[in-house]
Each structure stands twice: as C-alpha cells, then as structure tokens.
Image 1 (tube, helix red, strand yellow):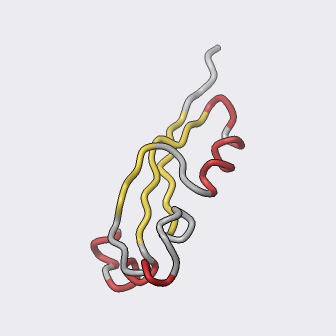
Image 2 (cartoon, rainbow, N blue to C red; image 1 turned 45 degrees about the vertical axis):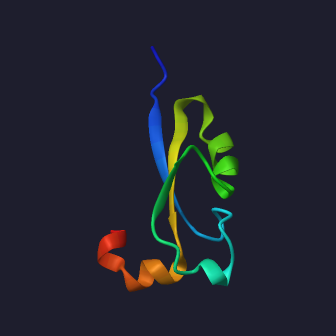
Image 3 (cartoon, helix red, strand yellow; image 1 turned 90 degrees about the vertical axis):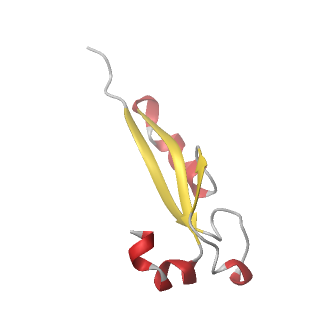
Length: 71
C-alpha cells in the first residue's frame, strides 16, 4: 500500500521568515514556495509522507491591525 502524502502550508511571522525585526512589524502578507526559517526543521519531521509546499508570513503588527485580511 502506498504511503499517504500530505502538503503543508506553514504560517510564521516576519522575524522567523528572516525579513527583519521590529522595523518590519508592518510587513504585509507574503507567500514563498517551500519552507522558511523554522519550517526547515519542521520539514525534516514530516517524514516521507509530508512536504511544506509554501510559507505564508507577515509582520506581527500587520496581522493584528489587519485581522480580516490576514484570515
């Protein structure tokens, strides 16, 4: 029987995406292909059945001030 496969879209904040610190807290939502930052470590724990296909990130302030957009 074939192993089940699943795809993951990982959400992190701007800091963990490597965009910057507090000066980038208003960074808008961005999507990049594959794992970023801690997602690289997470990917190694998904095993052969899983893959991080994209990472979504934005600044902490942007998220809290634009909650409806961020959802």
